[in-house]
Image (cartoon, rainbow, N blue to C red; front, side, top):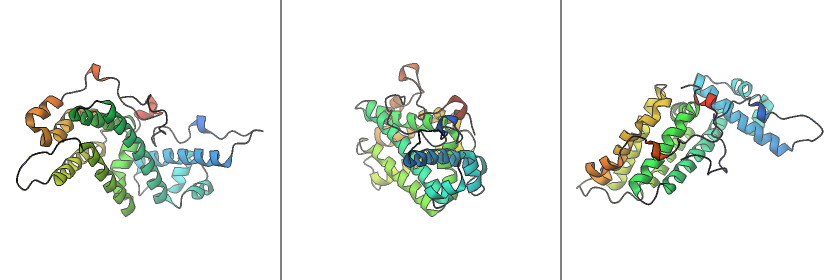
Length: 256
């Protein structure tokens, strides 16, 4: 799945450098509205924050560092956010919304068969995170250091991923195995596996996890034979890789 069919999606935070010259506020006789200026500064601060947090860690990334990376003044930062945690939460929510929309699009477009849809959503998640390693590290690793509100956002995200299992069928009829708990366990295991690879600085390798994660996601509901049929590496006829909106080749290699 590509992002070409989703022009409405905003760029993923970290997909561009904060000091992107294409987003510089140009001076001249045609004044830019205050709303446009604020929106541009917000986007640049999101990018600056993601790169600073990914590079230095949440605790060591200072507001002054974020502002410098974004080319935005401290007064402008505090006009938009109450502080670093507020900015982190805003960037996290924005980025997760972008990733979720891409996954939902892939899930719908893959067709009616749930194993194909689940695999497509997983593939999109892995490839989008791999295309912006800085966001992957910020959202999966540094979120743990960003305070209780950020951790609650992460828990809400994991809960929201349960929707991709709504069409999976009832699952095993085994005494003592609750379906809701089973789905939570599968989601948590997938998240932990992805997070571990990102924490090791190996975000670029995430697409290689598609077979094992597809098997882990489908086996509890399809059985081993059904999961084996759903599981396979990426093939040329699967279509082009998914990337985050507006990601550039140079940015995709940062922090990988």
